[in-house]
Image 1: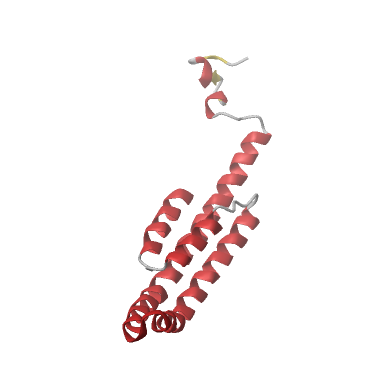
Image 2 (image 1 turned 180 degrees about the horizontal axis):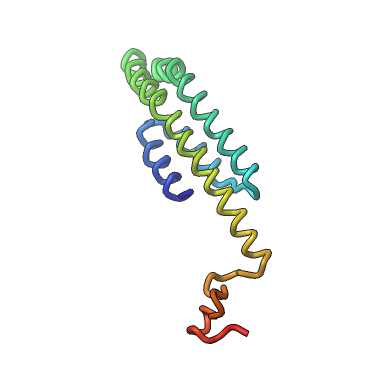
Length: 138
């Protein structure tokens, strides 16, 4: 689920029309938590940043646009800011859920590694060793 929610978040983030936001988000997504707590903390940080960027963008994007292109830039910035306030918090929700699933997956993977079940095919199930074509486990 972490990849699915992350992909949905990536797709929705493109609607923000904010390339710097997309670059920053891509860099943040490269940080991988070691535990559920680490992943949830990162997800909460990304969620908060999405809300903050969305609401500050309503004011800042028109100002940046006006600075670069005058009245036309102000209009473009206004549209960009309103798209951002709608899109960025939603992306933050997907990032938070993606991080939660990522943390759970990492903990489960660590538990598998700890107990020696490194490959699913090596698991013994009801006396049969799956990796050996159904021969009896010893």
